[in-house]
Picture 1 (tube, rainbow, N blue to C red):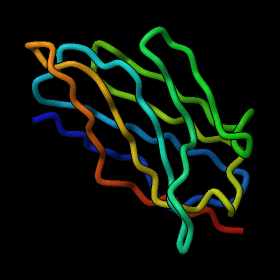
Picture 2 (picture 1 turned 90 degrees about the horizontal axis):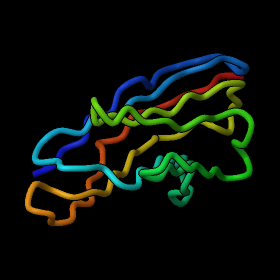
Picture 3 (picture 1 turned 90 degrees about the vertical axis):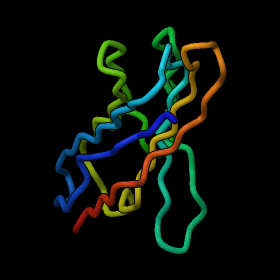
Picture 4 (picture 1 turned 120 degrees about the horizontal axis):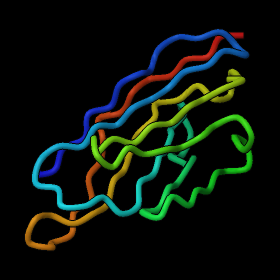
Length: 120
């Protein structure tokens, strides 16, 4: 079983910064694509950022220029650096990691969610 543990959420003032981490553990041969999603109260879950195995990234328009997704392959960890935070960034953030286990079977794992609250 592949498990993801998220950390780094909390309360921050508008304009501040926060870094989320997502540490994967278990039977992992390689991590391919990794994503960060968020879900605000009363809203649908939305894809925020994506990073591929080759390091390519993509972001939802509302966070471009403010958020940066990165990965440390040696640590099986994915990060989301969030700068210039706005109240509308308030949400529960979830990481999603896809990859291969030792015998080349696919996994698709989700973190438990971490709450980010941005005050005005």
